[in-house]
Image (cartoon, rainbow, N blue to C red; front, side, top):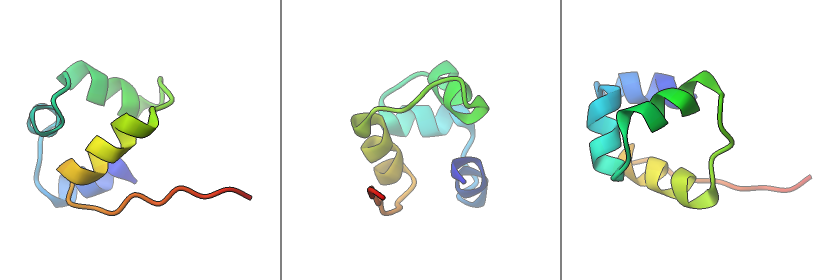
Length: 58
């Protein structure tokens, strides 16, 4: 979902990383599914993409 939203916002990985205060390589690893994001990472991602973060339990 994040890749689609990043592309919809017309942001490169580098631009998104700068908004989040992280590295482009961290964004690439996340988009490839190589890492489980922390809640802090997810919150910064949502803020950088101007999106809402929803966390739920089943």
